[in-house]
Image (cartoon, rainbow, N blue to C red; front, side, top):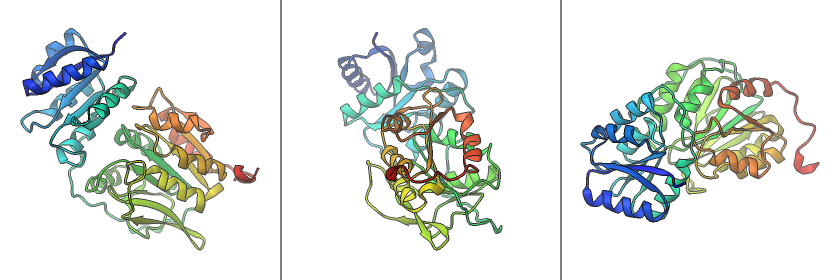
Length: 346
């Protein structure tokens, strides 16, 4: 049975082009609209599996539409545009409001692939997230946190904004130091970290080069840069550099996880969460072989199961966990004894 799509594009020629392209790819089009504000009756008549929304048009109330969708009928939304890029504010705000993916419509193959992946995505009902507004800066606390002895490395992408919050709200201020990559462009990770820092028990910061990894601290890799873990004597810190993209991402989960495998080995925990593609899977395998405890978010609670699925396929994962179990896993696993030795030397 063909997957059903609903198309929103103010331009008649744009709607026709999307319609022809996606029908040729095997999808069924249940309807089209020029404005999301007037699409609701059509959507209710034949609810689609995925909504494709062109956001090149500043007059569209995309945020209001996504808010209503998240509250009344959560449905995967794939954004497309010819003039915008993923780094543009309109795209980032729409992604923060719950859109699943963004693709430039000048690359039809990528758009078709994103729509296919979206048809397999699980979009749970969840509170509407306010979009990030740059350039808020995270405040650095003056507390005396201890250097961490166990490093928790987290990689996440599509659906990560809400999922990270779900984990942090269950963790206490003495949680081992967390280093985290969330696929997000520059200028948005700072405001994202500042918002989390103001809401949860941990100190959440956009990482700066040389930052120490401390108990109760979460370091988020800056958008547009790569973050690696370093060992400095008996302590851990992060290195932040303008290195090239890896797996088309900067920051890349693989870059972080590989460095954690080298520097922390058995003293690390690694978890890969919801996200499209395979970034982080090979790095988690390196951590797994180095003796770290590893986990992946399960399919049922992942917005997109791509990254966790690839890590599981590679044999990089000790446990597969629902979102609501991840914080408890971090707390208890960080207290477990170290493995006897790295798997790679077994």
